[in-house]
Amino acid sequence: MAEPLPPTRSRIPGSGLAKGLAVTLRTMTKKTVTAQYPDAQPELPPRSRGVIGLFEENCTVCMLCARECPDWCIYIDSHKETVPAAAPGGRERSRNVLDRFAIDFSLCMYCGICIEVCPFDALFWSPEFEYAETDIHELTHERDKLREWMWTVPAPPALDPGAEEPKELAAARKTADKLAAEAATAAEAAELAAQTAEQAAQPEPPVSGTTTTTGTTTDAATGTTTDAATGTTTDAATGTTTDAATDATTDATSGTPEPSKPSDPQDGAS
Image (cartoon, rainbow, N blue to C red):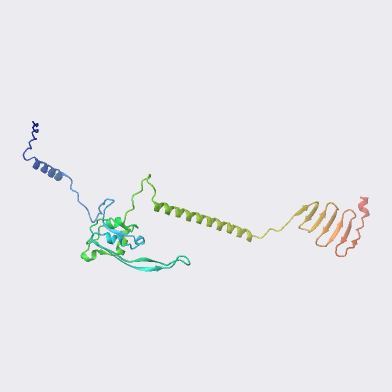
């Protein structure tokens, strides 16, 4: 035979009413909290959904957000422009140019699908919530207003230190490092060229003093050359050569030796 079920615990009549009154009493005894809005702005959660901000520079008019919107409250208009070839012989290409981007917030249900499906990060949640209007038609905000709300978007949370760096950040960092290296190289080249030009502009100092080579001494100041081997002295200014051994002087222009100067008898007496 099956065992009989254990008897259920009997409920005290009025226990549910007592629990409800207890909640009421706890609420009545709590301190009253009064919001001071609009004099004091409320502290919103970090991921609160207010309005949608548009970062127009990232929008490629792919129309994906408008197609995925379940309320069909996103209106986009664009036109195509022809972009010339980047290199000679290349092909021209066309691109979409955004003319209008509007969101009807009277229809939007804040599902966030448009933000999730945007492949180029052009739409973001903004905590702004003060956009009430007296006319329902004025709840359709154009791209200028959406761009103003973009600057109220909070910064994204910091990445986990152990997380892998996103590919976009890695590519941007690599490009920035390359540009910095090129700028440093160009600055060094410009500084070197400036130093070279400054050195070339400075006048060369005049040559002074004597120069000795293989027993010949040349005085740059007087222009005389003395040969230690033969004992002759040549004056470049007058073209005369003096032989120290015979005390004879030869004029280079005429080739005739000049008479030597007679000695003073007093010099010998002394």
